[in-house]
Amino acid sequence: MDYRLAALKLLCAQLKDAKEMASQNAMSLGNVLFQRAWLQGVLVSASNENDHVGAPLLLDDGTGVVQLALSSADFRLRPWKTGMYVMVVGGYMARAAEPPIIKVHKIVDLSQFPDREAMWYLEVMEAYKLFYRPLIEELE
Image (tube, rainbow, N blue to C red; front, side, top):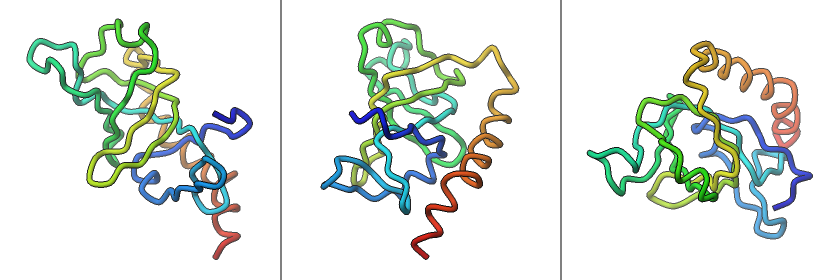
């Protein structure tokens, strides 16, 4: 993992436009290279609940769904529940015919901060306008 590449603040729908750059072991959105994505959303499936034993951990941000692969035993031992609003940062992997995967190296429960969800969309729009759009439009 190249930590010189920033974790992009993205919505799940934007991940669909990412292209794999095998020569650089990274993904790209236009001219923006990244390996890690920063997402926020609601857990719509959690594996430690009685009625969903063995179910994958799925995050829905309102624009799409990604599967979360918890890389740390510490993360797997925490009580993740359907309906929690969480922030995740991790390596992005696209998959054909399945939801993409985020290999999580940071996950935080933001459920106790109800304004975070509304603010997240503004943060993503601001990052796109200030940083990503100028680089993406260079290709057009």
